[in-house]
Image 1 (cartoon, one colour):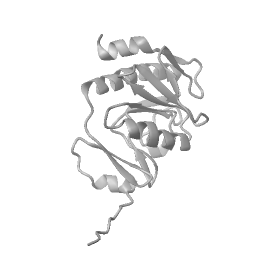
Image 2 (cartoon, rainbow, N blue to C red):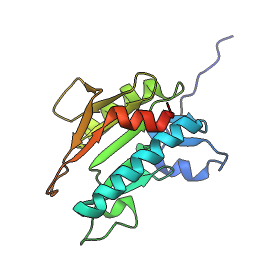
Image 3 (cartoon, rainbow, N blue to C red):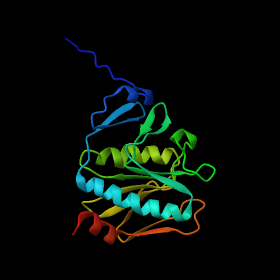
Length: 187
C-alpha cells in the first residue's frame, strides 16, 4: 500500500504555537528548523562577541546588538533567530521590535554540529537574499570567522582579524581573532 507523504508549509505565525521547551524554532522558506540548546562553549562565544559589539556600538551609535532568542521575521515564510545580530537605530534609539526596522546590519551564527549545514547553506542564502550587509559564522573548532556579503558568492575565511564598519560608523570595529578564541576557549 502506498502512503501519502504530506509536507507542511510552515509560516512565522506557526512558531507562536510551538512549545517553550528549550529548542530554537525557525522557518526558512516554509521549512521548520529545530535546534537543541547550545553548548557552554557556544554560549561563551556568543557572550564574548556580544560584549565586543555592544561596547563598539555604544561608541558608534549606529545600531544595537541583540542575542537569541529573538525573532527576525523577514516574511511569513522566513523567521530566524541568529545567535547574535545588530539592528539599526530608529531615531537614535534601539527598536522595540524587529518590524520597526525590518533589516539587519549584521547577523552572526556560532557553529555547532547540529546547525553547521543550515548555517552555512540555508541561512547564508537567506541573509544574502535579504541584503544583510555582513553575515559571520564563528567556527570554534577551526578558530576562524567566515564572512559573507550579498555581493560575494563565497565566504571570506578569516583567522587573524576581522574588521567591520557598518553604515554611518566613524571608525571600524577590529577584532583580534586569536585573542577572541583564546578567551572563549580558555587556552
